[in-house]
Length: 195
Length: 195
Image (cartoon, rainbow over all chains, first blue to last red; front, side, top):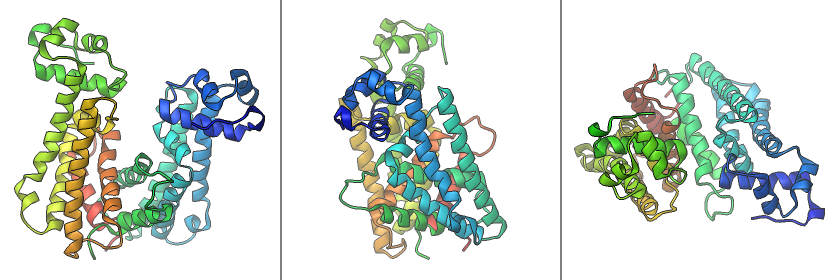
């Protein structure tokens, strides 16, 4: 568990500790007491930075959501054939997931018990919808197979990508984020079978 | 929540209620009191059937594991080119996941805090390993692409399949288990891109 001296604390380091605790104990199972212990600062020091744990949750999932939505504004997500734009988005989703691993992990575990969680779920749905629209456009162009329904294909592709949070660890010897992104793009677009 | 009259209770119906409660509250968060309330029978009646909640967990995850391991003994999983055997296994994994949805959901959420959970994780790893071996044999034949490492490909394919428990509901209007299995086989083996 990360600890830090009080005088070195910033909203950023507090957020990073909070996300770790939320992911370990679950958001519902985390009290301000747990956060205070993990951060090694008093509860009143935490309240100096934020109004409470829900604000920490909002900041944490915002960081994940902002990272994901920013992908949709990238040049390669905006210009070109939909299938190429989709490929760019899939690759970048994997990269953002790995760069912001604890934040995206938290986002994917949000269940909807509080206003902030419902807001996060709503924004996730919005993101998923925009990716599904890209897939639909690629199918309309005939670049993507027509025999798998768009909504189902979107769910399965997101399922593959999101499952990475279950096993990927940045310090693991072995695969880099780049290798995982390459593998996902290959499998999603051209599948396992040798052409 | 399912309730049933005491005199109609069988180990089978008790198991089905227990799995539902484990999936809703988490195994760690479930007490015999919760099980007794959900089943509508006394704790002593539950102890008449089983030694405790760990036995219920063991029976529940066994049902999922037995369903999965049985796939590996099916004719189409044993005979033919490895890539065809693999395709059969992937299709049947989706079908078993959907047929045994609450049991597989529970299996996938096991974390390893008790001996039963560690045993379940061990059997899951054994199953994953056998599927990975099939993928390796298919790659050796040149039927499966060589540019995605076997372990990584296995993880991503399992990620796609296992993610189905997050959204598939048997009563949902819309996709049938068969359609989901077809979609997974198409995406996993030949990908999204129109050939």
